[in-house]
Length: 335
Ligand code: SF4
Image 1: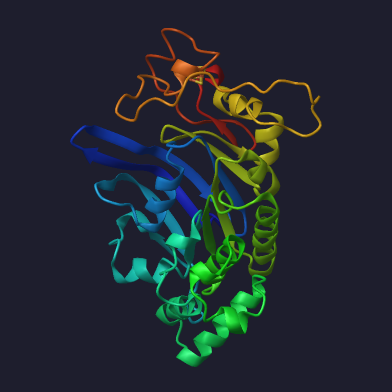
Image 2: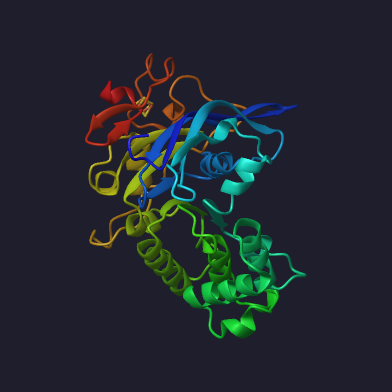
């Protein structure tokens, strides 16, 4: 693992349905260092969330991992050595995976309403999460829950701890979900569109909170988003996904200042940017993401690509190759 926290190798997660086979994740590879922030970006349906759910082994049926490896470095226990496990080989509901999920790898996502039960208080749910993974009494777990709520900026946590999730505003619910996710001090936090449902002011506060907690706890963050502005602000490295594959992987500066893949360039041209002339027109990406049952042959991006080379791009599939320091691209322009 060479000091890596997570190493995903050729991961394939497919959904076999009556209508056909959906290759939601189709050969994804990337690494994460401890304490790094990896932004995973791409349009809806590119496989970002299924990649995250595959790592946590919570892919809904009929989806299943059909190939690949997910190596994760577990923290040392009782002074013993750190251990590396292949999550793809573990039983999704087995003892080891349950010990990792929620404690060593935590998840926050877009809609906190669906992560809290509407009939139990927010605090009792954080307490249950703590009791599941830590050897503490219920009293101690409640104190920890109040402390976590305070840490994420929930005002009057002694009272809020007994409230239901629907009694909290959207911003406070998101803070409470972060408190629950971080209550067991994970080494990897997967944040799936964590601020998409929030207004701009609350979004800024939540991103700042995540940055602060990352600084204090040293955890790595996998940030899944379609919002390149959030990636520019938060990420150290970026993986750009298209139709279940990583098409470009690089440090964040290289993605924004020297993007190589035609899809990454098109994505960047489609968003407003600071310091460009205000009258410059944005260019939407041509065409639409193909239907999952109707994948193009060859390079999956070829029907939309402005650099398309007939006879090559529609016949063969490019592989991810290095083009610079920590920079890799999947495109025939660089082969
Ligand atoms: Fe475009 Fe061809 Fe590169 Fe695909 S391989 S991104 S179609 S130039």
